[in-house]
Length: 441
Image (cartoon, rainbow, N blue to C red; front, side):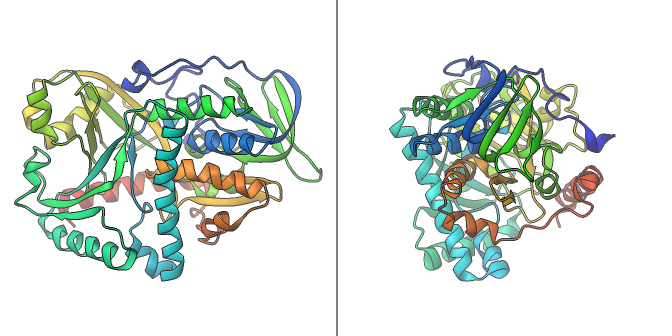
């Protein structure tokens, strides 16, 4: 059954990072032993991505006895494979959040998003994480009709939120930033940024371990028993952990480990290629000023230059949970649509990964049980928000729930049919969004 596909093994070699540019340029390799036998701890964190690593780090700094269980390698999932963009705000624009939740709640969400960017930068500095952080994200409009909305949104952020790090880019200036004929303008956000996502995850892991957290790799959780007993029992393939609290930080790779959370998040795949290194003049003609770029398509294209001047380009439509057989060719087509001048440039790396979205593109924070906490569904906006999410979960475990409540009160709905209908819904959604891009509606 497609809905029961095991995404931890369907597209990747267990225990190995995806064959990505990020893995090839990782600062180090991890070698944490699998969990064996019976253990106890204060809090057990399931998942070794940004959410789980940040939670483990912040709990350990609070003096808790923390164990983190990762089914493959630290940073193995979306945290080590993504586009590396550290975006402002939430995945949904503030004007939409104001209409949905009111201006006061929208303001809290904006403030938390600002805290998420600050936290990423703070952790990089405090723990000396070498992950090539650089400021600047350009949101490029692929339709001229979008420009007025972009201009208005910049003014809204400035007037209503006092955000001065973003400005409007018009048709006369867009070519000075990105060398593509496909864009008409957009916004330039210098308060946002981009980084090497796997090295950031590895840095969080080192910091968590230094703070006292125990990390276990190649330790797949097979069952969680949380009801009718004071402690949670987490069973793995070769051992078990009894914990006072548990944190689920599995995102798109949760499967059916916890059905309530699974009903609220839909796994989707995304794909990135890395070109061969470009000459300095050629790289400057593609993207000026070392910006990251994300465009306005529903099936989004996003790209930036690596530290060694490769173009890292994410895009392509996928209608199932299996990766394409030839990811390089799959993503090369949308890349050439944006940058036809790269026709003769070689592609050195191509990889895919699985993230998670929610019906309204806002993260799902919940308590599946009184002493169990979860955060997932960052909807492609997870580098900063998942890092903050881990810190927020650590606070909630410690009895400080103010920031957790801001997200929990969003009341993110479940997908119709729960986790059983996620695959057909994925196909319908991707077909519709792709059609909108092609028809310009």
